Length: 482
Image (cartoon, rainbow, N blue to C red; front, side, top):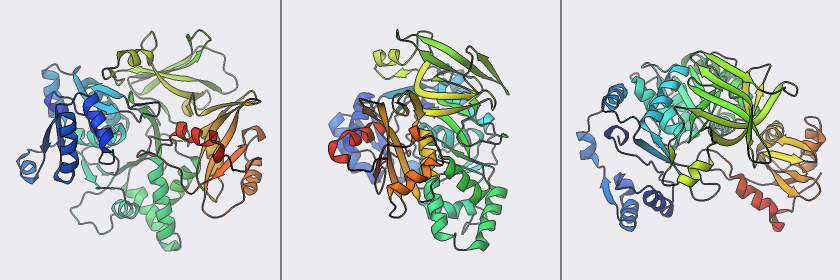
């Protein structure tokens, strides 16, 4: 409700440690902390340490609140009061390169993001979404909550993610006749992975239920979306096999909202994130030695059309470059960090995402190759995408999860290293032999490390900076080489 009362909201998670919440409160110069009785003790300590007022929302307060049918009336009031350019929301980034930065979004930014997605993904008041995402990220807050509220759709909120509980809701098992019928589902790849694991454990040995699940989900749910982290192609294919649904992939960041999306009626080719959403422009660039950017390709979403301008002769089918974005959804600033904000924009006001992206001339769609400084590995004169190598590794039937990084090397520049999770004991040689039939030899990892689990944040992302540090530590290099 902070957005609609012309104040700035800063959502935090109950999973954040006390020190992190105190940092958010202090850095954002918050005047009021709002919580529920379950977290009152923690937040009382935070309020005391940051000299901030605390409000605990008990049942009496909840009962006194007036719940509105949708957000359209509120947004109309905002427009009439001319506050669309005021700060509405501060979302803190994951902070993989230091302390998290507060991404400031205005009412205008959020309104544009909502209206664009409502149109692109065809939200209506008849929809009901099963919500399993955290509310301190754009994915869970804007995509999965504000969009349905804007059109008056229903949100079924689960208190926490539980794979069995999600399946129960998706299939409509044990639900009351008056319960909302789920028509939309959004999740991160890790959630889809957990749902596949639950499917295998609960249903795989019962062939009769396989067709029931696929028929049920294909007929009752109109849209399933994956985002916030790369979706491995084998996972996409397994989900299609189980549910009959082609997951819609999209690309966005806290700073830009959703920028690229597969078209609703497209074939949704796995590994690609579609085209610019309406009102959003992207360009692929190449940086020279003087830190100047040359535009290789520029693409803009205009109503139902996409305009492309090519400024280079492509090598083969693809144009590859660093992705820049501009449009009304792009954030205002990093809170109280003007110098940092300035560095993240070009002189002509394009936001530098830090991601390397590929545009297919034939398919006319974009693919994210990964973080320019971490996921693009330069080895022996070759430029490799860590995400594409991960996809090849994950295609092995006994690989549950993996992560790939480039480790500095005096001879090769970088060498490819992989963390791998198997579902049973398996010699690395077996995986290496498998990969020789899947990819060029220079792309096969030279270093492997087998682990039980790969640490990820709440949105299913791997902190590759920390992962690289682990590989660089001498004691961590007790792993097989090819």
